[in-house]
Image 1 (cartoon, helix red, strand yellow):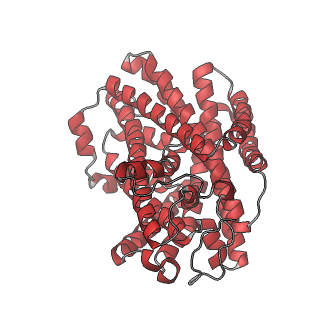
Image 2: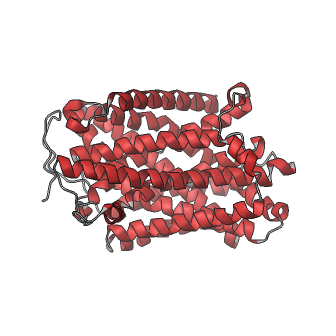
Image 3: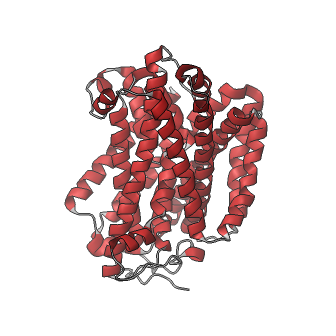
Length: 444
């Protein structure tokens, strides 16, 4: 087995198992081939991670923010994206520098009971993420084809077969499908922005933080929702693993180069995610806030009102197409995250399709029950509840990540510089505080 040859100084034991062993170092990286050819070899993991920042769970918050407050919360979307860029950089650096994904690092560093506890929390978060994907895809199928939500939820179970087929075609095939779906979403919202004709000056002004965000309780609540639910915990596990699919040199020079190019890939991809989240908020503001429909707060309402307000028949259709692409994209990356978490924390390997089936059933059962008993409104509330679960778990992924990457014994020359260490802890504490407040306020 081609296990990464990393020093064990700072770790309790040698790393004798590659993360995602079947695809570890499977993507060729050319040597001395110039900047752009090398960057092309590293392109892919960033887009797969960016999917988590545009999944159906984020849509309702962006829609509500734009409908109620116009463009004024765009600055919050931007700040959230900057937080994500920093944390994903730390995740990819951990994977490249140590040869361990975040789950493996936790298993090595913490005691067995703590590791089991962190694993259970991670599994709950992945199930919550999958729940959002199930509901988002079912809503999209309902909007596009008029399928009942219960039927749409059952159809989402079939993606187990799709993923099994794709995994046999190689890792870059999955990356290309994810990239294609992302660009489909970008194209849909590019069209939506053109027909909604937002005020460019006000959009630019919205990127600058305003004191009103803090002084207005309603605006503050939605801002916390955007900030608190943006960073997905499973993405940190995912990124620290999939960067290791690149066949870079496992020495200091090779790792330094890999960190540089993987960071470029991640940063550019996350700005695509920023465009999509900002586009949802801008579209909602342009279509609803300035037309007297500030009460719009969920995906179904937004889809129903887009065509009559904008006067363009394709607007609602493309909105639903983008939602379906978002849900299916998140399905692919969520599956890999589940595999990484189980193998990393437990050193237990089961067939990916079995793992996916278990996770999908955990999501389908509550979604199906709520859809049958409470219908459309109930599934929308369940979508919000899934984000609360993610908020609760997030700190248990962010804190170990910042802790490990700030430890010189574990990271060696790749340890966080002092300014990155300080900034990372500020972001971690801020995320913990915001998520704690959001959770308390939601439950109370």
